[in-house]
Figure 1 (cartoon, helix red, strand yellow):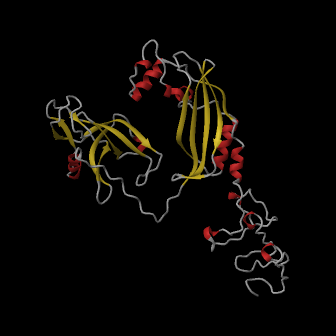
Figure 2 (spheres, one colour):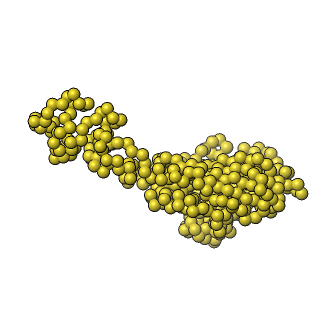
Figure 3 (cartoon, helix red, strand yellow):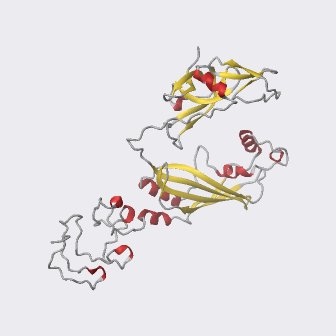
Length: 381
């Protein structure tokens, strides 16, 4: 026997590939390939026309395909490249409504405009006064569900996300949005909207994991007239599993330059140094080459006592950066000296951090080369 083919097999070199269709089944041979499957290299990929279509399996691979780990990727060369069956099901939702005849929870109003502008630091005069209009970038704000959630989602929208969840794509992260503005929104306008599932991507692999991008398009109307369009794109994904052999990456190095080198020299000595203007004595942080109050370039430093309170904070969940272990709390700390700085809040669970919580400075070594100032909760003397 040579190459696993019986010598009694008829020589049918006139067939494509030169293989007789009556070669016996020798699944006991290396690779376990049934020889009764004719070699039809004239077909795309050289696949026999009678190969079973098992696109219902993950990746659309035929269940009878031999396991050939010796081949690149461990896949038999004759395995057909079938369409992703899940993706075909997802495509059925494209064009279906995600919300129909939705209404804003509030009309366009001046208090929301004012809060938005204060949060964004936008002082444009068009957004204040008796003839105020809403900032165009508030378009989505008038359609959001708030803490109580959405009550206008369609059955198709819920089914789409249930299908993704059931396939293991249980995590979600917003990726981007696009907005188009057609006319300004004025206080008193009643908001209505319709949302459609505009697209679902093929399966994509990202650093977060593998999943599908889902894009919805919302047409926003004011008193029945189209005023803008909002496209919102998310990634529904299965989180990637880190390699157990991979070493934990080091924390990013701070950028040290001539303007802030003195600050990092102080950190190396376990001292938190704040700049003080040499003319008006205003404290400032972060370090800058000139005073924001009087413009003077003269300055010296004072050492912070280390006492402070949490002025504001966020809890980081996504995205997950190398060398960081979410969730964790990042606080805007108001120091006793009157300046604020951003750093991690440690010593309590991330969900126990509160505005006004007293904290105290300490220095945390994150690797053999780097120490950072952090603030431990409950830091009152």
